[in-house]
Length: 49
Image (cartoon, rainbow, N blue to C red; front, side, top):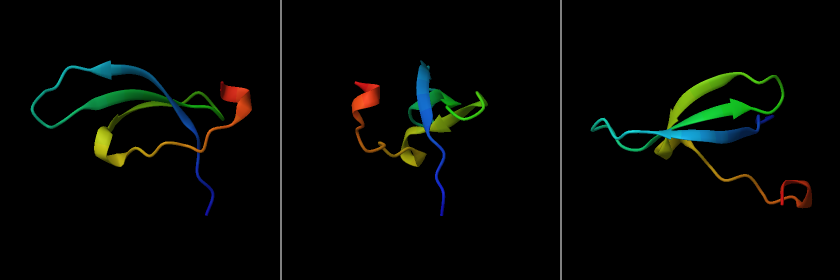
């Protein structure tokens, strides 16, 4: 299974459903909103430090 990498580009006000973040996919720049519970930290890579 291939997983896409997204970067957090901003956070949204808590509207009562938990923390939400604006994220952007590295591969093609697609943006979306995701809840904190659906996110997982990617393994650290020196290129991102």
